[in-house]
Length: 397
Image (cartoon, rainbow, N blue to C red):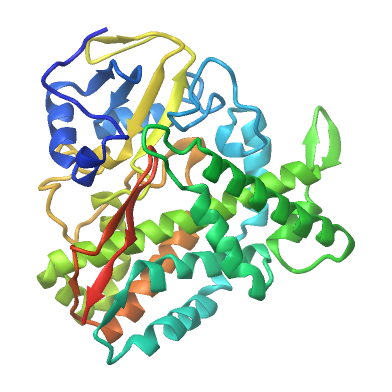
């Protein structure tokens, strides 16, 4: 086990987290497998190593949690597939893929655009607004709530619960009473909706989950109410947070790169590639935890079985070995693929929806506001051990 005294990174240090890229660059160059003695984890920072670990669940387990605060020798007692390894994960992933159908996703395009119009049009002619609180965080919550089947008049309350699930306490992280209680309340709320779908089915994902069947050891059974609720909670949380962070990052990055923003406004056909570049440039979820099941030797560093490993997808996206001039935002960059949605068996099941939301949101934004500034004095960052972005981005028009 090697230690590096001059190089330091941890996901709880808000000063580092405000701009981790210089530290991550040093880690990629000097210590691509880096040991944090304070919290007892290894960090992988290069693209090839992050991708490799995502593709090897037999060595890098998700069943011991993917969150640093919870990683440990015991498996997580959870029915969420994000905390599962094969074969359990394989069965449930297939199920959720059937519920999260391309038909259901593509059918939301007009609804997404209408939501954007409803939220952005009233801001035309104003001096500015909070791009995250008034738009970026609202849009994905409303979209995923509609997809899942949350009643329209209950969607804002559900969004507030999701936001509170990601509350972080200094020195404690995401495992705190406020976050835990919000998670319990969200679970109980979704469980109630699942139970209603069992007696009154609708054309929504909650019904698909409530009535879904899986096969175990040759026996077909329905999901339990608890299993279906865990799926709904996972989709609601992930579907809200990722896109909210993507759009908050976009507001800041495009303000900092006015020439590239002007290119996107003049040529909206490049917006899909710009969404991929935004995801590469600032990953909304830059850290994924894993627990090693086997001994590993990587870059002359021994990583014993039973180790905490953090896969820094946020660093991988800036790896110059894969992305030339990686610190430059280029909406016309050709990207074969990145790892900001994960990779392998845990690739984000909602990636197509997130991409569509990001594309439409930027199309409608740039159509109305080809230029804006960011009031950095009032902007606020969101810091957790797994999610990085902005909670408030006041823009001036």
